[in-house]
Image (cartoon, rainbow, N blue to C red):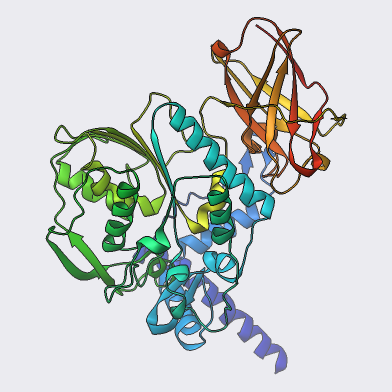
Length: 478
């Protein structure tokens, strides 16, 4: 009798397992959630032979193709978020029905980056500002706070807010280095109208208006502050956190819709009415928005705007304020060509992205560090790229014994008659050097037109409590 029960149990289990694929011809595949890409069936054989990861890839394929996937995700997350008050699928259920991203918890409870990494980030911004100012540009850097930084009262009580965060430490370093920084926590006023979307990681269009005004004011740029702009408030926005937690839900939240002026022209992307393109690039689908160029004959000046997803709601205010605007989500930042104003915006949770790769600007001349101690080490390395005429791109690593939290890195070129020194970005170029981000990297680009003819020995120097220099890493002849 017991054996028969086992057989029945196994048969029922196998039958239940077959139901999703049996339904597939009739109801189709599970739909994509959020920014998921197409889900092709994995290959058993690859160009390298048998695909050893086929089993796991097949399991992932089946999971996404399961036609019952969305209702099952909805059911699970409703139970976990609403009833059990737990986290699920990267989403946190907050107070008053607010949703938060689990990705921001590290920022909320305390620092998750090392002091050295945060100083490196601030120094990278500082050197970018120096390069922009050498080119005659005004420069502003700003960090948009995470939603739980601005509205901690809606976070669940089980998360204890830390006394220090990546953002607070970064801000101290930015002030120390003299960066023209716009503090969005101060720029976003307390109002009965909240400035972030309840079901989304981003601010709403009203918050973006305040943020844009603060940046344009810091640049001393004449602009329309939007006070007389007509707007409507609609409860029709499907937040990115809703899509993650409840992909088949009709749940929406309030969004502000302004009647933006459209006296400008899109040079990139192009094709279609201006208002329609603006609506598309401001939408949460993030289509055709990686590189945007606009022309506005009724305005003055040129803008370079490096942004992330928070910047999309700022687009109309900047576009309407400049005769020409170049707006990008591409790293690295590239200022070649010259701009009147340069704005670098990033959200708090993306601060580590500053260290992805060094900005494409010519290195800033500096005074050599005052140290004669030489550290010979296999950890002192350099990679040289001279493939672009008139440019010498160098990156590498220095021995960690040369480093302190707030030390700076310099590339020194010595010939028999000349010594040149340039400050390097404290960036580890992982794409060139391999591995992941490291605190002991350096990167810079030299304009060889500024280097007199001669044969030079290149080394890297550090300042601070462990001031020293590497052995000669490369010999350059011009």
